[in-house]
Amino acid sequence: MFISTSATAAKLFEITYADGQCQRRDIKSYESPSLTTADGISSILSDVKAAAPAVRYAMTIGCHGMSWLPVTPSGTDNEMAATHKAAMAWRPETALLTRYFGAKDKAYQTDISTLAQAISEAGIRMDFILFDDCYMASVEVAYELKDVADYIIASTCEVMAYGMPYAAMGRHLMGEPDYEAACDEFYAFYSNYTIMPCGTLSVTDCSQLDGLASVMKRINSAYDFDTSISSSLQALDGYSPTLFYDYGDYVSRLVGADNPQLLAEFDEQMARTVPYRVNTPTYYAARLNRALPIRTYSGLTTSDPSSHNLAADRVHTAWWKATH
Image (tube, rainbow, N blue to C red):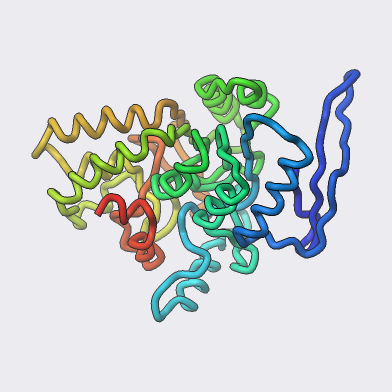
């Protein structure tokens, strides 16, 4: 386990269970570690490999999350956009706590492409990456990580501050993962979470993402989205304009009734790409401090139809380049 104990210090340690007790063994201390560069993250992963040699690895990342959005927005107004991005962390004082990968200060944020590069440089391919963070189940994020992980487990929406119910889910992720059972445990927990019974979780099979991109490229070459119907799409955040829309709903509306065969092909590929997904009837948006209805849920979001100024950088994502 690697944990930042402050803004300038971190520790790597191992937790083991023996004789009815959990035990901690400190491995290494870090002073001012580089946590936002590929070299820095890769170095930490190399320390993990040296301390715990294994045939298979998996990764859990617990922190804030803002999906695929870059640390530094591109364009001439990047500083204004960066300020806008930081302001998006605002929520009413009465809002419930959620887990919101990176802080609102860009000095502590990490691009998803940087994470992918770091894992690759460390010579590791993860069985799965579990994001215990908000908004990380997006098609843009998954496509960026497809060459360094077999599966992505994440939420499309904000995750309540409690995070993943590891006591229930954990046993299904040890050894040979049972992703369906892990999702079911998540759903059972958050369906009965009295503070706010809201939660979404999905499992993405990264081996299917190239196939999904191939179908999506054909769709994009044939159809243009009617922006006048944006407000009727399933939003999965609390921003205005919406940043993260349900991906399946977007494609369904993009193709419409014009080509049922192509839409059926997409749906079949989507089912292979996201084999497991669960959702409560509503999701919580801290910015609005209320639960919002989920009428359709595919397990992934996209920012393709978003008019939000921060969504402009989608054209620089690997997903956009593969599908347009």
